[in-house]
Amino acid sequence: LDKWDRLDRSGRDQAVGRFQSNGAPLTSSPHEQAAEFDEPDFEAKTSTGFTVIPEFSHMARARPVEAGERIFRRAYNYQGPPVGDELSESGLIFVSYQADVERQFVPIQRRLDELDLLNEWTTPIGSAVFALPPGCAEGGFIGDTLLT
Ligand code: HEM
Image 1 (cartoon, helix red, strand yellow):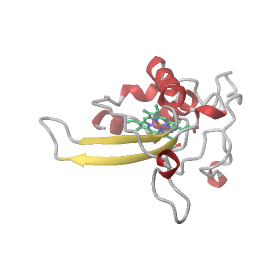
Image 2 (cartoon, rainbow, N blue to C red):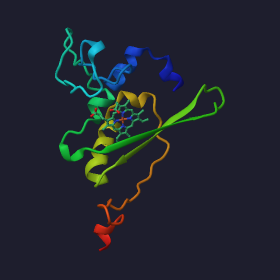
Image 3 (spheres, protein in one colour):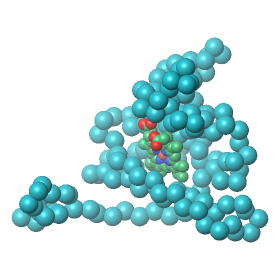
Image 4 (tube, helix red, strand yellow):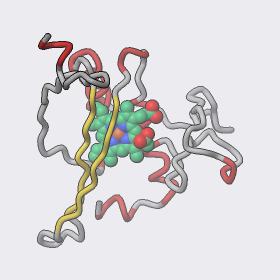
């Protein structure tokens, strides 16, 4: 995050594809009325012909290309003590829940691997996959659809 902090606000907005101030897509305007859950417009162009939401932005690359690719995300930030000359030892534990890792998570991760400006500031340090049993209705028990 040391280098990320040296990037100006507009550079950070471009890298993600959203305004850092309120999470709204870069195509929401006027900015003051923009809201996090506004639908982004990936076709909108600037006066110079570039897309308003950069094609290399994390949002443009990560967005599911088909409905079946949608994942449920949770992010856990961590902040450790400084190491050496670094100002921060911070990171994000990215967690996603999906029915099928190969069909849903992997295609997104591949796109981010090929092109994602955010990669400039992030360093993957590990990963793991866990199998979770399905939930249950009231009166049932976790995994009952598998076990009964
Ligand atoms: C350090 C790693 C990461 C950071 C800091 C990060 C950050 C962000 C941010 C700021 C957003 C926009 C706000 C939001 O929708 O939550 C976002 C969206 C998203 N990210 Fe990440 N992300 C990371 C890793 C990943 C990974 C590994 C994946 C999947 C392989 C992923 C998939 C997504 C998806 C699907 C979206 C929603 C895009 C949309 O439809 O708007 N991200 N991420």
